[in-house]
Image (cartoon, rainbow, N blue to C red; front, side, top):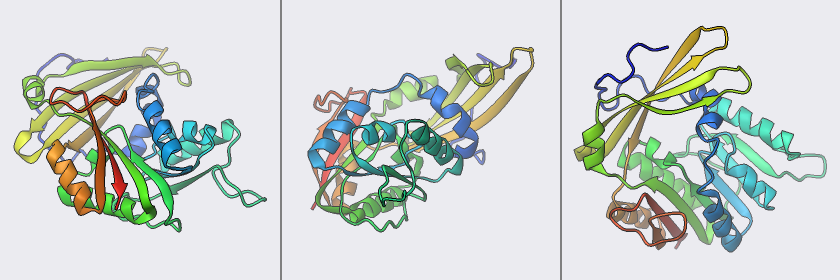
Length: 279
């Protein structure tokens, strides 16, 4: 096991050790194994908007698969080939095609693409969404705006966009900056390893940036261990900025929630959830 757990270390914002999503892929489903909080709201919004859906940053299909099971036709994009390979396998295991089949149908389409500049043949999508802080992986306002504009171009008139972000608590982030903590652990059913997830955070409030350095420590049954270190930079939003960017991208904000139960946003809310409509 690591000998540096619990010590105070500082990691600079936007270090060169940037997030490698292909390396993260084998930890993804362990990380999200019990997380389903966002799925009911996504399903509810998809049912209201229509059944043609686009997910930005679909990962391993954690949210995409329930949408397919609910009867939606879903296109999922992600930059990581490794994450998409897992999503494709999971769809197949549940009996859904991720490519066009003989009768011309398909339950889901998976595309390796950058959310700031993707081009799909579909231009009449009913509902697009980006959850789990994924939009924050774009670490400049300009990149975030490009992603919103790209999504807007693919939606039909009146189509909906849902964005789910954490609501930043800068005072808390500054208080824990540089302190390594055990954020989670689980048993990997395939390798038999115990996975320990260590996290060290830093924040630059003026630039609206948070960076978390994760160390995934795998302890195997034979006693040996391995470590994978990944840097996870995020650019957070304030509500007014989010509204401004959505309006610049051609949306009108319909709802601003503070949680997945649809409760109104407050300054101390856990989440910052926008539902916007293409103008």
